[in-house]
Image (cartoon, rainbow, N blue to C red; front, side, top):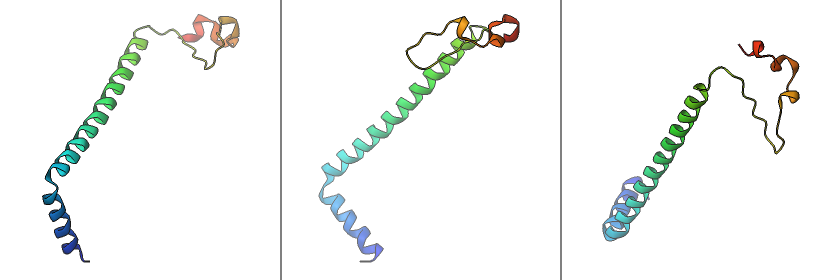
Length: 86
């Protein structure tokens, strides 16, 4: 089957199933829109958090994964001095 015959067959199938074709297109459009919206919301939230962290000043913040809470005593001596944060 050549490409012209395949195209004709596809167009006939679309014409025969108009409602199914429209619902499929609607689903694809809604899905793509939802993905774009979620990416935009995620980037906006990331930017907002970064701006809030920048607004805290030039203080150092150490984020350590896990359930243990770090204290100033846990930091290396070079990070404990406020002068080293400049």
